[in-house]
Amino acid sequence: MKPRILILMHYMELGGAESAFLGLLQGIDPSRVDIRFTEERTLFCIPIR
Image (tube, rainbow, N blue to C red; front, side, top):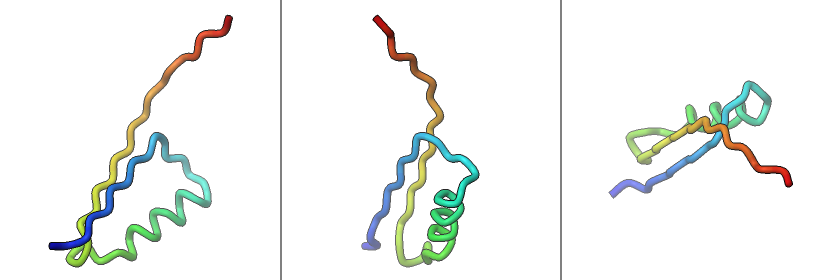
């Protein structure tokens, strides 16, 4: 059984940290590790009283 990595992100911009993260994902061999990546863009409002 391969090790599993689950990555959940709520936004993905075009900054340095995101570029480094994508480079890290590209460096992982998918035949050795099961990787799931999910990005969800949600908009929510916080009521102000």
